[in-house]
Image (cartoon, rainbow over all chains, first blue to last red; front, side):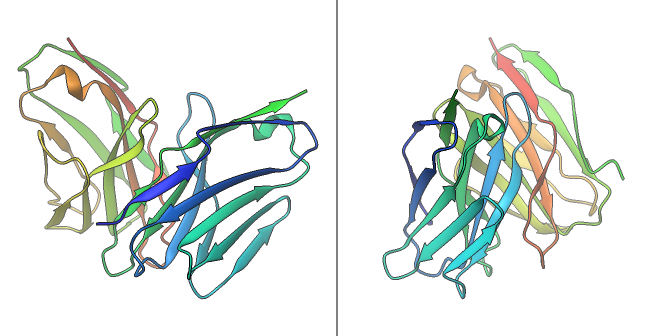
Length: 112
Length: 112
């Protein structure tokens, strides 16, 4: 079955700097790659997603890139702000299978 | 819309007891799933359903049962609780075309 690896497990960046979180997946048939943000004590919420027919997608300060050949995808957050402090999860899914498998998460700390 | 609701919010069980975690959604979503969240382990898929009458196993199904008799409800049953099942449990639902998962508020379960 699908396996998703996520790195790093913890990331600290200075406010205003950029943060990058990387994920790899095992099943080449996966074609949907969402990213979720979970603030302390709250439920995960979708922040951005990308499908396999697209190499990059941006939404304001957040971007996701996908390299299908290497089976990895990354989340980029620019001009980080205190409210970006949270746990971020990547995930992968094969449409025909419908289940969504998550990575273990990255705890992002934004330092003042 | 209430979205995805889960009951109870907190539960303490003794080893060997059984119980059902309730999950309901009022968005007419076809897809529903159960995850458990443990420190450092991310969100692990327990069971999922692509529609009423259809369920399938996820990554960690042992010790849990599910059924999907209606589109709205997807209860998770713990047959004989074990301390290893101490966790936060999240239910999620999504519409097939979107794939965005809407998570419930979670149930914090402690097994002593």
